[in-house]
Structure formats: structure tokens, C-alpha cells
Amino acid sequence: MSKEPEDLEAIERRAVPRAPVPGLTVEGVDAPLAQVRFQVAEFSFESFFLEGEAVAHFVVDKPYRLRICHGDRAALCAALCVRRESAPRQGVAFRLLPDETEARALLAELLKPAAVPRDAD
Image (cartoon, rainbow, N blue to C red; front, side, top):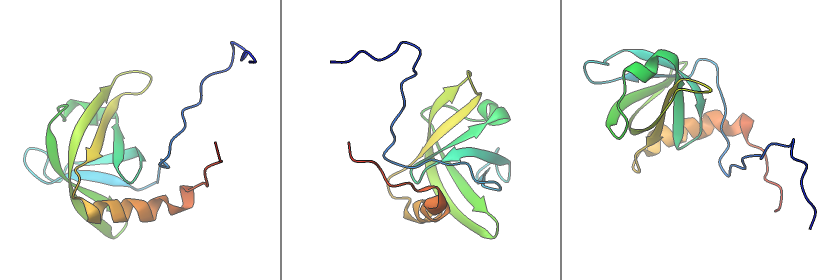
């Protein structure tokens, strides 16, 4: 058994691609966040992360009705705020609720350019 050098960082392997896409936003549907728009920093077809001031507007473990927007395409969805981060980046993470097929389809379409075949383990 070989020992790994101590200066190497562990690599997180993800089965689902994640990517930033310029112009991808999420906006609130219900008050007090109605029409408040946040830039999506990173997303997959099941989750997304909002950086910056979004952290002040969302509560962990609370579901939200949101609209995912990119160009002239949009999809309404329900998503659960699952995590807050303060370091190394500040923001909030969301997971789409199970029946959100329209939102998943839009995100999957936007992820196509980021898809990379997985190496055999």
C-alpha cells in the first residue's frame, strides 16, 4: 500500500456535474422576496448555490417558491434551503424538491456543455 504525499488535497468526486453559467438567476415568487433576483454561482440539475447577499434572505430548512431564469427561459420550482456557508465563500445552498421536473429539465439542458464522462473507478 502506497502512502500519499501529505501536501496533496483530497479531490471531491461528484456523480452529478456542477457548473457556473453566466446569466443564470433565481428570483423569489412570494413576498417578501417577490421579484428579488439573485445570481446563481453554481448549480447541478438537483441543487444550486447563491452567493453574497442572498445569505441574509433565506432560512435553512425552509422551502421557497422560486423562478429559475436564463435568457428567455424560466421555470418555477420549489426548493429547500439546505445550508448556509460563511467561509470560504458566503451564500446559501438549495435542493430542488422531488417533483420539480420542469426546473430539472432546464438545469439539465444548461449543464450539457459541462458534462464530462466519468472515469471508471
